[in-house]
Amino acid sequence: MSEFDLIRRHFTRATPGAVLGVGDDAALLQPTAGKVLAVSTDMLVSGTHFFPDADPFLLGHKTLAVNLSDLAAMGATPRWATLALSLPAADEAWLERFSAGFFALAQRHGVDLVGGDTTRGPLNLCVTIFGEVPPQQALRRSGAQVGDDIWVSGTLGDAALALAHLQGCIVLSDGELAACEQRLHQPQPRIELGLALRGIAHSAIDVSDGLLADLGHILECSNVGAEIDFAMLPVSQVLRLRSQQKLALHGGDDYELCFTAPAERAVEVHAIAERLGLPLTRIGKIVAGRGCIVQDASGNPLHIETEGYDHFR
Image (cartoon, rainbow, N blue to C red; front, side):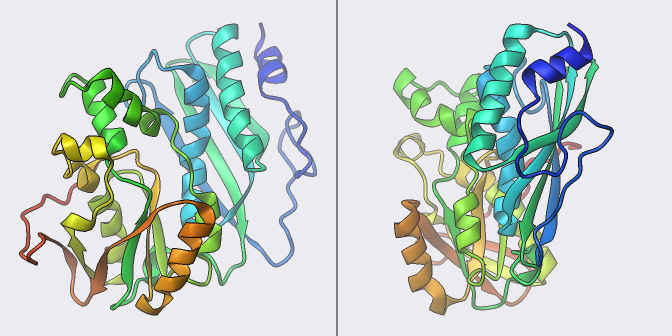
């Protein structure tokens, strides 16, 4: 199978949202009037971001999901994507499963695949995602204000718990692994939440490298500090029973949203949670100063390392 047969068979679909999609030297895209483009790129590398024997369907899903999560954090509507693949071989069965996982999620969020590249080499997967957002409504890291509540969606730490099991660091029962493994392999980008937070949240970020590390980006960009209530962190029953709550602070791959909003908008945030059927938990507040303090139930500071995942450490 040639490179062009591979592209035509597995990665060419109708692109109703593009002027011109796959098949030419470049795609032609027409942004909606009055919107700006939000563009993000993420690379997944075999042995670094996923196990070499990962289920290709789930890998196709995650390859797109981690990019969609960035758009969710910006409050952007997904529109288009490009996909660059480095493949050890043109494995038909693998490609069929991978593309099925990728396009299942793309269809769910109205994403057209409009281009990319393929080459032979170690397994690497790279997506560039394009979304749209009204320029004054984009959620940014730099908007947090003193007095804001800090919120997170869903639960934290399950993906890291599953990874710890797969790496042999802990041993989970089959039931425990089943309860948290999907969070690692098939994260759900919070697109609807990001859209609902336009005009309500002052800042937002997706939790990919660990809550404290990612919240730290908001604090740095906004020149503020934070106080976090450790007891309020939303964790699953498995994480709590395993006494692994600190994974909620450091664990990566959650792809939930962390956002700040004025305290007086809390009723609206709760209404969004009810409408979306998605738990949203207030975990702390933005304060003057720098850095993040994690407090116990009595308000005493806990000694917590704030570093999250870093590719070069």
